[in-house]
Amino acid sequence: MERSVTDKWTTRDEKGDIMNEWSTRSWKGESDGLRRRNDGTGETWHHKIQVSPNGSASFVDSRRFYTRDYVIESETRNA
Image 1: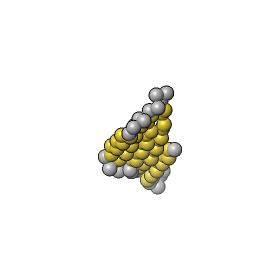
Image 2: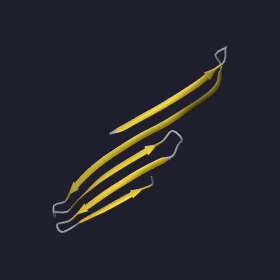
Image 3: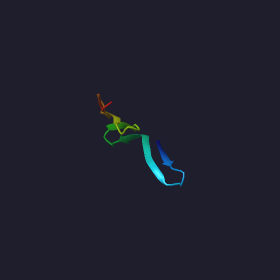
Image 4: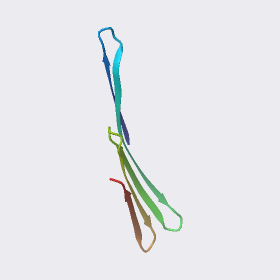
């Protein structure tokens, strides 16, 4: 799933000439995945990122690795 938003503002004078123009962008994105192997192991992942209108970005990257005996979970974020 992904969502994108762009807002643009333009200021014009009485003649129609552009005096000021600026835009703000923000977006969010997510993705998930699953991989199974023939030896009974596998992994899942979930990525989520968000860019705010002021340009700062934050993300979360979660992964799980499965074996027959245990699960390893890893999470990376810069929130």
